[in-house]
Amino acid sequence: MEIISKYFPELTEEQKQQFAALYDLYMDWNSKINVISRKDITNLYEHHVLHSLGIAKVIHFRAGTEIMDLGTGGGFPGIPLAILFPDSHFHLVDSIGKKVKVATEIAQAVGLKNVTTRHCRAEEEKGMFDFVVSRAVMPLGDMIQIIRKNIKRKDQKNPYPNGIFCLKGGDLTREIQPFKYKAEVIDLKTYFKEEYFDTKKVVYVTVN
Image (cartoon, rainbow, N blue to C red):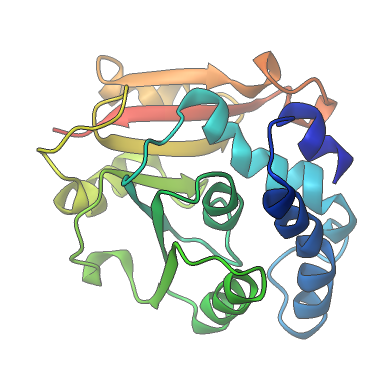
């Protein structure tokens, strides 16, 4: 938990309590439904919560922003971002029902009023959003094809035009190539000094 406060020192007491509650909740649920590698669960705050919050170092979602978390798994990056941005709405979608159950239960347990969840394939989701976020769910080109229909073309309320923010790792040169004029790649090591983030990136693509 200290690592979250280190990089986000402006948290309210309620947010601190919500982030602090995540460890026991994920430990408990992960013992029943494996949403995080058993070997990695002890790194929950660095590898999952802080990693998710990398998006918040790139964009500060304004009040009323609507965001879909595609392929949320157990709630990443959606739940940490929903704690940080209580005035934005997060819709968490995954095709695996038991993972959606974990995300739903944890969001309720920490008292998040700005989260909805849905068990469905991305192709089935018809809702419209300002942004889609994800954590290395699929290649960028495939993702854009699927979620283009879900991005609002009007009602721009944020510093970045409506589009997608993906958490990715490694060499993205080939994956980004088709979108090089619409994409921005931000190294998370700029913000987070831990070795884990040396190859981690946020990729933003405007979808119009």
